[in-house]
Amino acid sequence: MRATERLTSDGAGLIVVDLQDKLLGSIADRDLVVASTLGLIRGAGILGIPVWTTEQYPKGLGPTTEVVARSVGERHAKASFHCCSVPTMVQDLADRKIRHLTLVGIEAHVCIAQTALELMDRGYRVQIPADAVGSRRGYDKEVALGRLALAGAVVSSAEAVLFEWTETADRPEFKAISALIKEFDRDPTRPVARERI
Image (cartoon, rainbow, N blue to C red; front, top):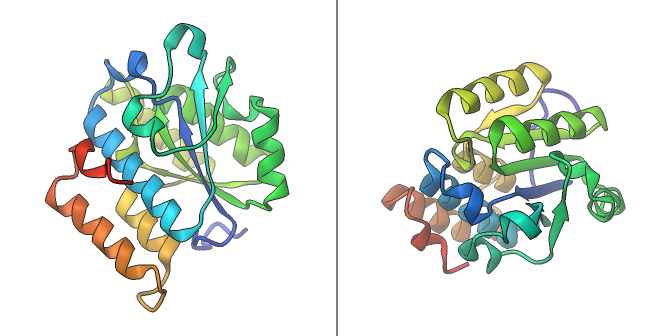
């Protein structure tokens, strides 16, 4: 893919990384991260974009937070910080001919960064909506997003991702995507608004 190519729903995938309660408790802007993630999960469902979910060492850190767990399918356990350590997920990406991935979750400077770099090294384009990733400290997130942008990742926002996935107002799913975006306008930080996925 060209660096300037738009990241539409064609060949797209969404990876939800480690949104577990034991980790979320100390994340800055956690409500915004969860709400934006839920909006993207819902948008992916509307547009037929596959979603993968990982959990970092769930035996010790527990499962994905309930509001997200209800919205996703299988959750893949991992011990490595990058998600490419999950062989079944990596194979599924290849089988589905995924070309670009949107990463959401935590932490931006650890699992998100390492997954993005690994995916780019494997030839995937990566985009990261800044409002759907978080770290315990704001400066760690800021530095991670800067590093990833320099490495070639597209740093964007959840709303921008939804519009780019959709491409055109002529698309049949646009009305549902537009309604979803209006939910962000009403209260972008309230995860409850996303529970109806």
